[in-house]
Amino acid sequence: MAQRVTIAEIAGMAGVSVPTVSKVLNGRSDVAEGTRARVEQLIQEHGYRRRSAGTTSSPMIDLVFSQFGGEWALELIHGVEQVARAEGVELVLSECGGGWRPRQEWIESVLNRRPLGAILVFSDLDADQRAQLEARQIPFVVVDPVGDVADDVPAIGSANWNGGRMATQHLTGLGHRRIAVIGGPADVLCSRQRVDGYTDALRSSGLAVDPELIRVGDFGVSGGYREAVALLRLRDRPTAIFAGSDMQAIGVYQAARELGLEIPRDLSVVGYDDLPVAQWVGPTLTTVHQPLRRMAELATRLVLDLARGITPAATRLDLAVEMRVRASSGPPPLIK
Image 1 (cartoon, helix red, strand yellow):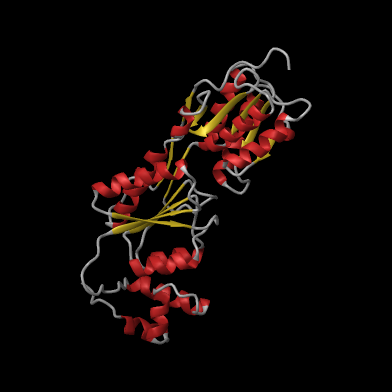
Image 2 (cartoon, rainbow, N blue to C red):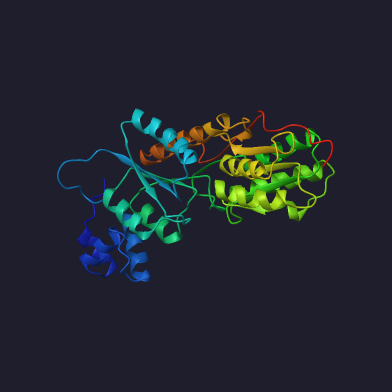
């Protein structure tokens, strides 16, 4: 077995000082880009691992969200926590503050904590952040990627395109012809996929795609409400709305109620996610079931396997989705 390399030896090979290598190890930003890249490469090549001082802390994994989103986030936290608890691993929660990438402060914190791995939900890492984690042999897995991720990035998602198509086919099967969609942010991959599934289902049914009926929201209640009000005030308003999330669908409920429309008599509504709230609202919400807990469980097992040097059978998975037909969808009104 090769002798363990020291921080001083890394510094000598890189032609820098020991404090500079320490700054790179701690994720400090006050290091020149070229110097950082050279040190990172040497750390990775020689498998340098910092010795822990004092007692050994409990193993942990980091769970990082773009932002905490109520029940949606809780479902994922429950899934991760269930596996982590069974494996004797602690869980650390972090938030990107609404951005798609963690802040540098998070990277510095992770490099100091040295978790077994990180799970990034609705967020991703830039090339420099990836290099810093890879150099410390800290694996990461992306859940529900924001955008297209590199082929070598482990990721767990769901069949968003098929989900959007299923939701729309459910409505066309009921006889609806004016079907609107309220997607999430346009720069988010799962949102675009759901809207693409919607447009494909319309075309497959021989229906025209009306740009006026395609709206961009934020996956939240307020965004769903705002866009639903605009749609329902159109002269030729839709008879059905497919919302890109259950929380958006609740916003649609609020808009319909304020405008004197009854669901599903005057307006059918379909959500996405199948959060517990879908069965609490009245009428109960027809929605696309996305297996959030299962996604989180698989991501946790995957990151733990990677941390333990176990080669997983697959590092990229898209889980199936299913329709949950309830009371919020029905035939269109006879007279519009």
